[in-house]
Amino acid sequence: MRGRTGGVRGVDTGRGSGPDEQRERGGATAPRQDPPDPAVPRQGPSDPAAGPAPGPPRSDTPALPGTEPADGTRSDEKAPSRPGQDTGPRPGGASPYRRLVRVWRHPRLRTPRRIALGLVLLLLLPLLAAGIALRVNYAGDPAAGTQTRNRDALWLGHAWVDGRKSDADLDALAERLRGTGIRDLYVHAGPLEHDGSLPATAYPAAGRLIASVHERLPGVRVQAWLGDELATETPDGMRLERAATRDAVVRSAGGILDAGFDGVHFDLEPLHSGDAHYLALLDRLHALTRARHAPLSVASHQIDPLPGLHSAAGTLTGHPKYWSQAYFGQVARRVDQIAVMSYDTAMPLQSLYGGYVAQQTALALEVTPTSTDLLIGLPFFHENKMGHSAYAETVAAAVRGTRLGLSRTDRTREHFGVALYVDFAAMETDWTAYREGWVGKE
Image (cartoon, rainbow, N blue to C red):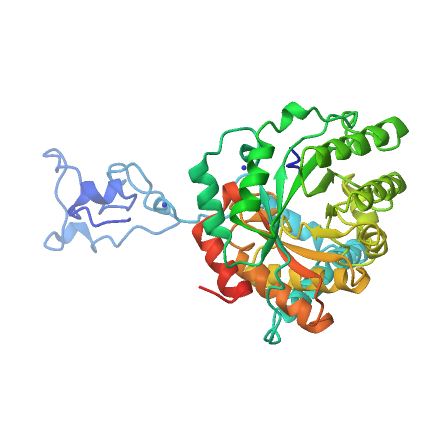
């Protein structure tokens, strides 16, 4: 399960507008006149010897001493600008942004510009087209009758088999499940060791759980959920290419059935598309479970939304998240039950997520034998992290998407259901959405 084999002025200051304030704002004041000198005769219009009154100083004539403004500027100088006023080119020339724009617009870069634009469009247009397709896929109404077939499943945590759950917990579980479509419980009984072995001490209270479920919920099967991390992307983990490891996994499955479990549910991750060793393991496991009249169930990766996407993802990221549709079909033909982990999709909106689930449902139905139970995973958990948005990936959106996919592909398919992940992270709203949308009951 997604690597879980085992989370926010200027203001008027009220100041005056006298000379001091003008100087503070950088404006020029009226020229200051010095007091008259008694030794110098006064000249004026009433003095005949004085001649005509002098006019204002010419701009090209130096000012007489003592006629400079009080702030020290010459009368022929421009007043200094106010703070924040653009006074022309700044030191250093144009801003880096403008220089970059000029370089980008250079005629010699015409071809590189076109290439860059083409690359951007090459990346964005497919994403836009895919988003539109998923939104369209979420449109419409599900067909009548596309609800539970009473073949649903629920993943349960390890606390149910290690002694932490009480009789009151068992009673509450039984009450929760009555009237739903849940027939299988995948109870975490592992994880497996990297060598494929599994000590019986990993599930000491399994017998009590199995007996309680059979008593309280007749017809409900208790399967052991066994998982481990594969050494497909890291040095550590289980190596299915080793025959001894596959032998040990088969022996562990036999021990599980000996302990009274009704079936075995495997979740080995990350499992790359096309892994032949996994197919060989499933062949041997199915022979064992068939002989013991027990179901063999597996959790699967999502199917390529676009053909070959798993190869591209593997090349670019080293993590080929998807299985090809053909490989999914190969796995489905080797088991009795397959559950698609249709969550952790990185979809940002409920409509896109619902459309994605509808697509996954249709792709899986196309290649799953009608005799194999196909279950679509519902996100009964709430996390916000890379690859998963609790806002987008809701139970309601997943249920609607499942019903739309079923309606368009094979609405009468009997061996079909949903799988709820996971009991210990579920909220009441999740159960309500499941009951109202899929079971048809409030």
